[in-house]
Length: 460
Image 1 (cartoon, rainbow, N blue to C red):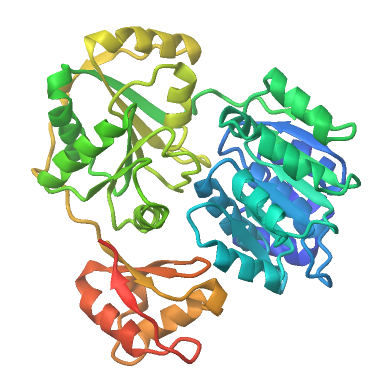
Image 2 (image 1 turned 90 degrees about the horizontal axis):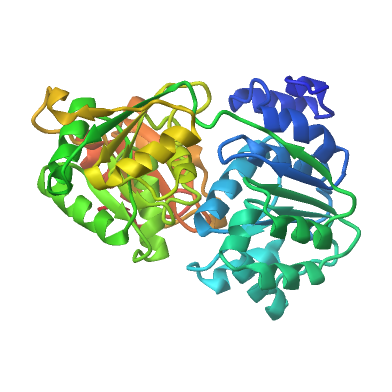
């Protein structure tokens, strides 16, 4: 029998209070099924879709069993992509914020390895990283795992799809055998079973069957000639006027063409694809999260690890080649019981894909005419916020409250004019109302945080 209340688990009162403050009011199906096993220290294979709440499962298990008196690395969390590393690290820190001095470090490519070596030398009880960069640090001797007690593989099926089997084997061969291993995967192909047999001891296997498409997602598909797709997309965006929207494409070139077109039309749009440098990619995702960039155009590969809460709209500019990808795309909206809208443009050549999507999710989506769409605006408004980048982060012990204080001090901006604040390892970001951009920039440049001044610049 599964439980639905976190209070029925063996968690501290401080952790329960922290979870409540973070909005974790009741457990998702995967949390209810997996948490009792993980907290008991047993090996686990959990099969659940992206967005099911699995990060909280291993976060709570790791934190409950962490030895805070030791600075040694006690847990490795392996992720397939940099973006997922950043996302997982962020959520781990949120769930750990009631525990003082929990040391969490991220290791992934595109970030200076010397900075990572410095962080590891200071102490890192939990290390989140991609397999390639983990192997690099193990070979250099900068990542010591002799006292490791926990291993987590997040999105294991994607790691195998991306060809990380050799790296996984090298990492596992360097770890103590007496450990807990938690494996999470959206699918369960034969190679996952083989991986589990190599990694785990008598694992418990749970599968959480969730609806293929949430009833909270309103889906529409519009018939459109290929040459009219850009105008059709513009029409849909002007009709729905989203604060944030992800437009999915099948090809990298499409993301660039659409971003160029929409920016010419007065939208604030950006392409997310493999050509971006890691720093530019992180900046772009922060802007989208801060609602200082309204339209993000991405391929499925580029969007891996993208987790934007309260995303109201998703658009399929091109229908994907397989229906499961369609379900993953639209599943980025309508989360946590909130409503969402998924719109798709479909040409005559794509009608077969629509039939496969209907069969896969047992739906009866019909082609609608774009002529029925009547935009109420000629131009989508500029985003309310802009994002400022500060040249100090977690490494310099910069805190969100200090940034807020610097902004709202004498002669500064109102607290209500400050949006989201994100502290990364070596940089911080703050969203401010567009109307107070200059004053906010000046205030941050003049103010001291942790006794020193930092460089500040506007993204974009």
